[in-house]
Amino acid sequence: MLLTSGQISMGISSCVVFVFTSLLFLSGYVLQQQTVRDLQAAIRPLHLPPSPTLDKNQLVSKRYGSLQGHSTYGKLPTSNKPNGGWTKAAYVQILRDRTQLCTAVMLFAELERQESMAQRIIVYPEEWHLERGSRGGFSSPVKTSLRLLENAASRYKVLLQPVGKIQKFLEDEAAYPLFGLLSLSIFNRLIYLRPSGLIIDSADLDLLFTLPLPKESAILGISGNSKEEFTLPSIVIFEPSIRAYNDVLSSISIETYSDDEFLRHIPQISGIGEQGHLVARTSAMSLESNVFTATDFFKSISYVHLTDPDFPGPEFDIPSQTVVGARPKLPQHRVIWEMVYEIFKERRMSICGLDLEPFPAMVSKEDVSLEPSEG
Image (cartoon, rainbow, N blue to C red; front, side):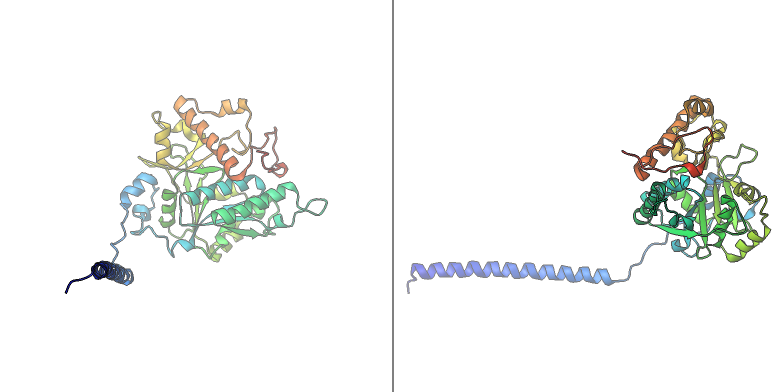
C-alpha cells in the first residue's frame, strides 16, 4: 500500500519528536544524577588536613628579639589559636578624652581591613553620654565623638564599653587607669596599642595572643627599640582577672599614680629581632640601621608608634620649625619618618573626616574641638 504524502510527513514528525524527547529525558537524567552526587558530597564528613604549625623558634627569634631571661619564651604554642578561641581575645583602646578617639577608630578600621579575627573594644568615660551644651542639646564636639563611636561599632565591629571613674583617684588619667583593663575578665587576653600609632601588619600582632606571659604575671610590655637603655612599652598584653585587678588596685598610691609609672614596673621584652621589628618608634629611627629603604621598613614592621618628645601627638598640626628639629638626620630615615606622619594624616581624614588639630604653644586636650572637616 502506497503512503500518502501526509502520512509520510506525520511519520517524520513523530520520529523527530521521539528523538528530541529521548534526548531531553537523557539530559534530565544525567543532570539528576550529577545533582545527587553533589548532594552526597556536600553531606559527607570532611577530612581536613592538619592545621599548619609555626616554626616557633624562628618566629620568636625574628619577631621578639632577646627575651630577657624568660625561658618560657623558647616556644610559641603549637597552634596559633588563642586560649579560648578568638571570641576571648581582643584589641582594646582606653580613652580619657576625645583627642585619641579618632586614633582608636583608625586602628580598628585597619584591623577590619586586614581581617583580624580578634574582637575590638573601645573603653571610654560613661559621662560622655551625659555631657550637654548650654541649650540642653549635645555640643558639636560631643556629637562628633558619638558619631565616631557609632561608626566604630557599625563599620568596624567594635564593642563599646562605657566605664565610670574609680573614685579612689581624682585626676582623669588615674580615674580611668590603664590597669583597669584587667577587670575585663570575660576575655582571656587583651592587647593594648599605646597611641598614637599605625598598624602595618595585623597578622604578626595577632600572634601575640598566643605568646606566653612571664610566670605569675598578668601583664607584659613590648618595647619599640632594643638599642635604647629603657623605653616605656609600645604594646601591652593583659590577661584579665578580677584577682589581678584587685591586686594592682590595692598596691597603687593615689598621690603618685600615672600610666607611665605603672608601665615602668611591668615585665617587658624587646620587639626587635634580627630580621624584623614588631614595633618601631618614630623617636628612635635614628638608632636603626643606616641602610634601609621605605619598602624594607614597611615590610618588617607591624606597628609604628608615633611618639616624638616635642610633639603632643600626630593629631596636631605641628609647626614647621618643630618638625625640622624633630626629623631624623639621615635622609633615608627622614623620608620614612615623614611618610609615617603623612599616612596618619591621610587616614585621619579618610576614616574620621577630621583635619589635624591646631597646635597652640600649650595645648589643652579638653579644649580640642574634634570638629569634622568641611571637606
